[in-house]
Image (cartoon, rainbow over all chains, first blue to last red; front, top):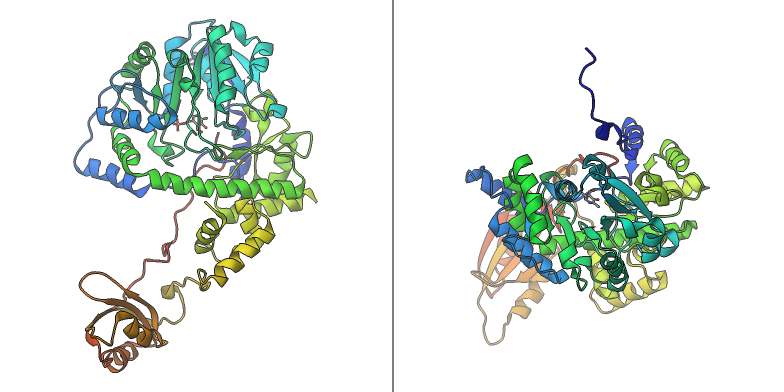
Length: 381
Length: 162
Ligand SMILES: Cc1ncc(COP(=O)(O)O)c(C=O)c1O
């Protein structure tokens, strides 16, 4: 007996590049980690109270497959500020995190052999999601000299004209880059010309510090070919409650819901109550957290510039993506961790064009950030 | 936010932020920070910088009370006149005119309960306009000036996540 054999499409996917680094950091005491991809705040108390109240009232059954109607309506109102109009009845799907929504889309839209272009550096789940669905990944490397904005030129160069789907994420994890309406319009024109369906991960939309967030789905002629992802993990500091949503054309949302209803049934109920309250009454909390992030962002960028570290002005999410002072960012990150107990994630974990960079998360209190920057300065001397 | 509002917000969060940190946090020049703070002090907007103390953790603890004060006004005596007399006492840590069932709310601090009681009965109550006082001794403080007095939440996030 040889035991169960693991499926090829799972064996194909290596363990996350971040994993090894995580193990190193976990072994040490007193590490200040700038490697965390989730808020250091807790969920707004009103949202937590709403979750508790729903449990006290015994609201512990499944919800509608697509999520509670009231929540879909609240989402529909919330996204109007980004000039997005989606019908709560059939164009919005509530999921267990944006993660589930992304997975559903790959399973609903990708046939074996379909090509999915992924703008990199990117969040680490897109590539495995495509592989699990049997698709072929086409990495598209955005460039440091473009401040990691996606352009038709890099799409063309990578051969994305022949792809079926395109995944992008702005505000971006890991770079903190955002894209303006004009920049998105150029990508949109490319997508329309080459008939690409666009999957736009906008989970950091509310964490935009300069100008307003723009969704590619709001660009003329894009709504019918775009799926937008958002959720409560980042802006509302609700990562552990696992709640997100997708917005898209009704045929796509229907197809996603078909997978969702058989695999998840419905997103967890308690967090849906928290989310309704979050959308109804927590704008101030989001704004307070956003203000704190923005100050830390400025703080870290100032410290980098004082140390002579090159870093473009990241304007979204809670990451900055400096150039690594050494050629080998992996070696740098490891040495910094060992000598100064500061964890930063090497950019190569997020795709080829991330190499030579470091992802620095500022989802950490100012005292720790200050100490981490002082230690980095010491390390460089 | 304009520079003044932003600095007020930051200093209320932590009055010990250095000028260089304030400059970094707001992406402004240090000289601009210094000038703005000076202007705020000059204009009487910034009146002081004080510590927030959790007395339950200190070696000795003063007795504190919130006192409700009712007053009777007449042609010669307005709220400001009464307030002017009462602010003079060192025991009075804060004095506010409030809406509702009583007129003034005072925060009072002294070394013992006896000292607080004597202060109210011998100094405050005899002020001619004062008609009534109600003293509430502070038994426990959970939050002062926006700062919670618990042990904080443990950061239970994983140290490196995607
Ligand atoms: C870009 C991006 N998309 C999606 C997710 C996952 O979000 P959720 O918690 O909603 O599944 C993350 C979390 O780190 C992320 O950074």
